[in-house]
Image (cartoon, one colour):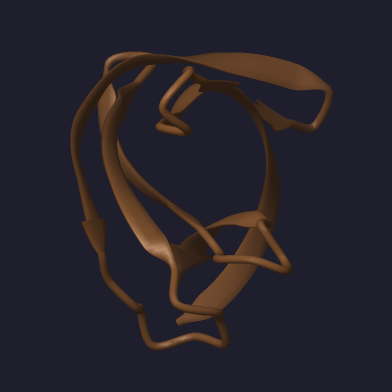
Amino acid sequence: MQRLDISVVELVDENGEVTPMYVAKDGKYYCVDKVLGVTRHAPDVACISPMRYDCVIEGKRKTIYKDSHPSNKWFSVVK
């Protein structure tokens, strides 16, 4: 498994809750149709206590992660 850093446009509400809205890859934006669940989960890659976002992106079920502070980077995991 390998970590792949990604760009994400996110919405942060007044309570500090983060919702991914779009994932950017190769100059294209992919809409996050729905967030199915959010949990604290560390995959088998280098990361800082990430939150796992199970999502539907452009009609496909995908999982993306967000590192905790100070990194706050978004990433996915590829085989």
